[in-house]
Image (cartoon, rainbow, N blue to C red; front, top):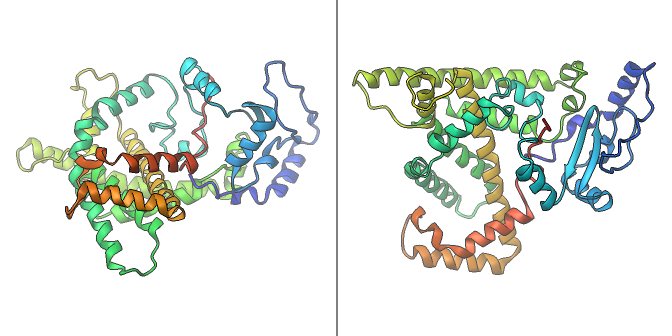
Length: 382
């Protein structure tokens, strides 16, 4: 998540004035917190605690507030009653001990539009559909055997990235962009099989969505004020991106269905990419199958895989490289380990990764210092 994308909060004073005008005549007095409400910082009428989070680093601000008000803290973000959990002990209570009570997700605008009415993996409400999605992920999409089958794709794309870096001959280039493009290329080939003609356009849409939807958005903090979607331009932007990505995914699904029909006739050999795996769950013939996925369900899942797997992985690599540049001793030790493990091999072999114990520690420390998503996806109490 791009936590620096807070342009939507810049005209906050204008929003406040308009909201005050709409709310005139209503009761603007602060309601007293109930005895069960956790403590929290001061707040203003209507907008609540939003001013506390008008910062490029809201996660750091939340940490500072938690030091003062406790690891279980109440915030009123516009119309949204929010409880912030900032300790491992409290997080365990929410995500493990009482996980069923907090298993659902709030229906934010991005999930409604880009997630096909929140039918993707990340934001689908807790229930039978979500349980079946989880079952499909663990038993079909992300099994060790299937992930291992994509090893040649990862190695080919990594080799392409290394060749691109070598071709620069020491000249400055945008490593962040190169890592993101490489990650999206891997996900695209894993999801769609062969490189499709619309792959570049789809990746471009995903990158644009990442910039548009990062951070908080004012429309989700005032869900009853639906006019804000058009006023801020956020709703029309999401609709435009959704139309583009939906058309691309529709074409890809049609191609896969045609290939599937030809494969049944023995005319071609079907590839086992993620789209083909999901298409199996459209038939009623599947064993142990409680739901039949629609085309929109499949598109929502594929879009979710791109959104969740592209930027986060690239950001992790990016920050790890940056931290090693800041610590030459660590960089030198990691390089020595890599050279020792692979010796004179021209290509990196995934089977040797488990031997690089120091590099694993470096990555874990980087995740601790610079997590790609310091704020987890919000949960909703059922």
